Amino acid sequence: MKKLLFTIFFAALAVQHMNGQKLILPTPSTLPNKAQEKQIARKYGMFIHFGINTFHNEEWTDGSKPAASYCPTNVDAEQWIKTAKNAGMKYVILITKHHEGFCLWDSQYTEYDVASSGNKTNVVEEVAKACKKYDIGLGLYYSLWDRKVNGDVKDQSQDAAYNEYMIKQLKELIKIAQKHTKIVEFWFDGGWVKQNYRWPVMDIYQTIKSKEPECQIGINWSIGSPENADAHPVLPENQKAGYPIRYFPSDFRLGDPYLPADNDPKIFTHDGKDYYMPWESTVCISQRWFYNTEDNTFKSIDELEKLYKQCTKNDNILILNCPPDREGKIRTQDINILKELRKRVNP
Image (cartoon, rainbow, N blue to C red; front, side, top):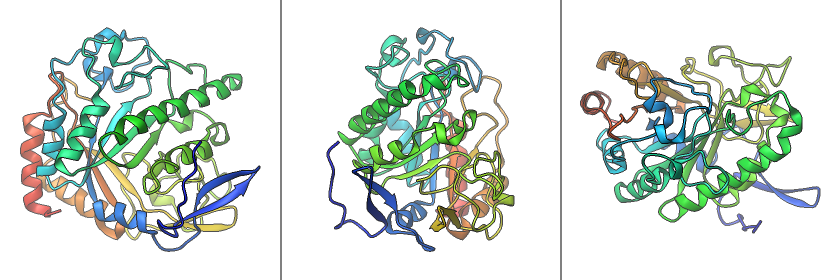
C-alpha cells in the first residue's frame, strides 16, 4: 500500500512502526485535533438509509431477499443532497451496505449489489457527485456485520477471509468517492456480533487514513467498561472519563439512537494513553431507519429542536435520519420538517 507523508498535515496523526510497517494512529491528547475540530464544526448532518430493506418494510433483512427486489423507480441523489443543503446540514452519511450485505455500488467481490438488481444505478457515486455539486461533506456507513457473506459469526475460521473481503470493499468505496469528492467520515456498525479483537480495526483505520487522512472513523458502541473493554452496551449516560476505547484506533463515539449525557466526558483511554473523542448522535426524523409504508409518525418540530440542542452542545454532533422512499426520493414531509427546523435552530 502506498504510504503518504503526513507531517505537513496536522500533528493529530502519529506515524509509528509495528512489525516493520508504518501505522497511522491518533496522537494522545485531551483536546480535539484539527480533523476533529472540523467534524465538530460540521455539527449537523443527514443519515440516508436506503437499500434493499426499503422494499420490504423491514429494518434488518438477513441476506435472503433477492437482489432484484431492490427496484427504485428512480435514484434522485441530487434531491437528497439538495435537501440536506437547504436544511443547513454540512454533510450526509449514506448507507453503502447494511447488515444484510446488499451493496449500493457494483462491487467486484459480490453479486449481491445494485448491478444484479432492478436499478443498477451506482448510488455511492451519484451521492458523491451531488455532494461535490452542493459542497456537502460525504460520509459513508458500512456494516461490519454481513449476514450474506459471513452469516455464521460464531465460526472464527471465516474471519480472515471475511476481513480481507471488507478491506477490499472499503478500497472500492474510497476509489469511487474520490473520483468526485473527499470522504469526511466512515461510520461502522454491527461490531457487537463478534468480540472486538476479531474485527480488523487497525487494518480498517490504515486503509482509510492512508487515502483520506482527515476522514473521521467511528464504530458503533465505541466505549467499553473498566471491567471489560469489550462490554456491550455501555450507554452514554454511564460513560465516564478514562473508560477504555472498545475499538482502537477510532476518532469519535457512537451508540445509536442514544443521546449524549449533559456535559458528557470526552477523554477515553487505550494502552494507558488518553484520547479525545466527541459523540455523534444518530436519530430518526420519523420512527424507522429505512422507508416503511407504515412509518407515518414524525417527530414534532419542538421535539426535534430539543434533540438538536441536546445533541450539538458540548462539541457534539447530530445526524438526523431521512430515508428515501421507493421512488428514490426523500419524502415531502421530511423536507417540510427540515425547513421549519432550520428556522428554529439556525445551524
